[in-house]
Structure formats: C-alpha cells, structure tokens
Image 1 (spheres, rainbow, N blue to C red):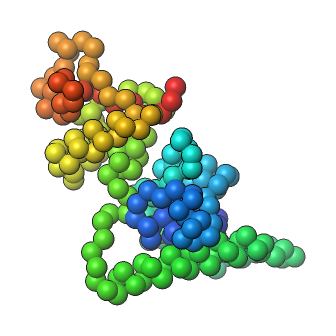
Image 2: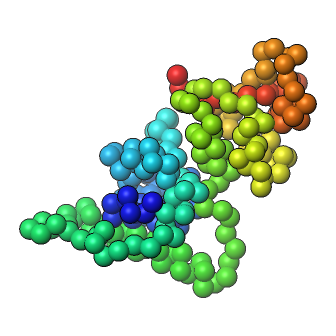
Image 3: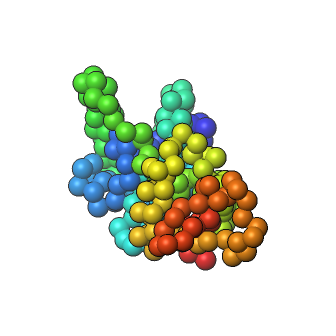
Length: 206
C-alpha cells in the first residue's frame, strides 16, 4: 500500500518507474544526483516494491509490479508533511527534485506517445516471481511453478531470459535429480541448456 511508504521511498519508486529497467546506483547518481541506499533500499525490498542486486557492486535496482501499482494509489497531504519543528534536509530536497525530474520524464514519454517496455525487465520479473515462490534466498523452485506466475511471457522469451540470467553469480538452474519423478508439465516447462533439461531454479547465496 502506498500509505506504507515514506515520501523518500515514494520518490525512489518514481525514479525507478521512470527508468523502467534495472539501474545501478552509479547511473542513478549520474542521471538524478541520488543513490538508493540503506535503510530505504532494504525496506523497499522487504516490502516487495523493488528488487535489488547488491553483488557485485554497485547496487542495482528495479521496480516490481507491486511497486508500479503503489504509484497508482492515491496519496494524501498528511503522508508528506514534515513534523512540526523539523525541516527537510538538503539531501531530502535533492531527492525530491530528482523525483520531479523522473516524473517529467514520464510526462514527456506519455505526451510523445512513445511506447515503452514494461516497468520491469524480464530478469527483474523472474526475480520477483522467484521471491514469491521461494521460502528463502537460495531455495530451489520448480520452473513449472515459475511459468504460472509469468503466464503472459512466451516460453521462448522466458527461456532466453533464464539462460541469460545464468551469467549472474547468484543464479543456478539444474535438472531434477530424480528424473523418473519429472511430470509431463515439468518436462514441458524445462529449459534446455548445455545439452540437458533444467527443471529448477535457485537465486541468492545460501
């Protein structure tokens, strides 16, 4: 819910929504003059609004579908009020100006009628879907279950994205150890890589 977001967290979501892709802190600083650091990035990840990759550095962030939906929810003036006797820091003012720049980018895009990709790239959506299925980072999940959450993505496109993600140090895909237990649905959902079918996915260091 947008009501759970601080004004700073909301500002970061606007920036990530405007970019519509995974963006590193270095690139964010170059474009907007700000970086998404702790505690903001940790809370946004824990609440499912963004996906962050912290290794290797610099940190890289992308907005999730939940984060996009939060930006569509109505806000109130009370959410952005500064407590009596307090003032916004220079850092906060810089962040809010960065959010205005990002919002302007969204307005210009809408006015020009230019079609843009979904707010999260496919690897980002895979990571978000994995997070919903896995009990903890590094747990194995079945690709057949992952495809259910990404039903709008064609098999060929998802296969290509999954194969590309193997280049990330925290991503693993392996065949089912007990081949006789693989169902028809699991076999159809497999990704063929390196001469073998991979049936399960794990993301995150254990």
